[in-house]
Image 1 (cartoon, helix red, strand yellow):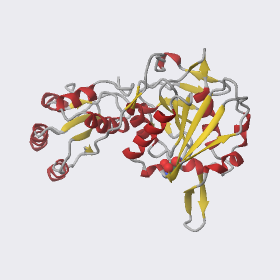
Image 2: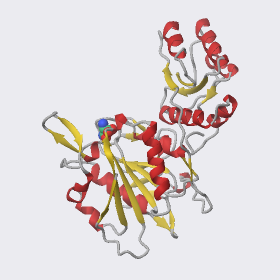
Image 3: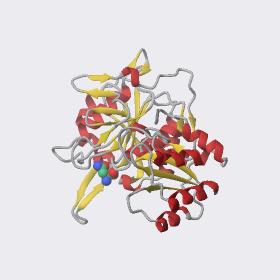
Image 4: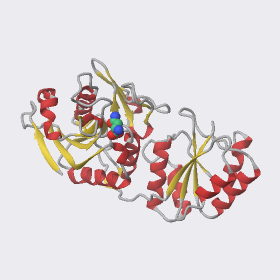
Length: 353
Ligand code: ASN
């Protein structure tokens, strides 16, 4: 990994220092004629592509991954590496901007929000729908504004002290965001939590919804994920054979049960029996709705009553992205089922309410 310093207007006196971590994604891609597809490029070329950076009045350093990733190749090992990089550089920099592909950005933002306990500096993820070299690219606005948000301070304190996604003029809490658009520029939404800031002529922060800055917070970085999990999405017509087969996967410890509406599932005898059988085998089920908005309320309908009774954990208004990363995180924290359930039930970093 190499770190380069970008030439800006910073004068070296009390300047805010931002570390950009470039992981890959469309933002830094160029067209490769050989494969007729988009491939990552060397970020050392960024000043040529984004001369506007020279006009910013804070220090910017860029750390580039040795292997640039299309974010479809993201995984828990890289999340832990990112957390480690932030830990190592925490005292040297005031804030962090992570350049990341859009496909799995919401998963990475969620994972980092759990890994970085007691964070009191901004960690802003951004990327683009069009590569930076393309004339109509959204990369420039996304990147420059993400840098400005990362550098924003009031009374020498950062305005933001949590993991966020900045994209297409809106700042979202990272673990509340999801990618909902693959063609238009407005790639991300946060159905169950208000936008944290809107960037127009001015950047307007939605102060009541920002995580409070805690001067005494000391960063604690966690380093564990258990990948023995799966997402079981219900659909009308799902068979007993399918459900049994996935639940019998060797080593499985946790399941995101993607249910209908406010947490409802079929009440067929075979389904209820299977659920009970695997709950008794200490598989943890976390109930997350297939709806983007609203929340799981187990027991509201007869079709979720049984799940409540047998000890399925309600995911309330959490997204699937935040839920699967939380499940991996919680299982990594403890081998005790009750302890894992306790972690799932409480909000770790504002991911559910
Ligand atoms: N496939 C790309 C990625 O997630 C998509 C993007 O960045 N717009 O890395």
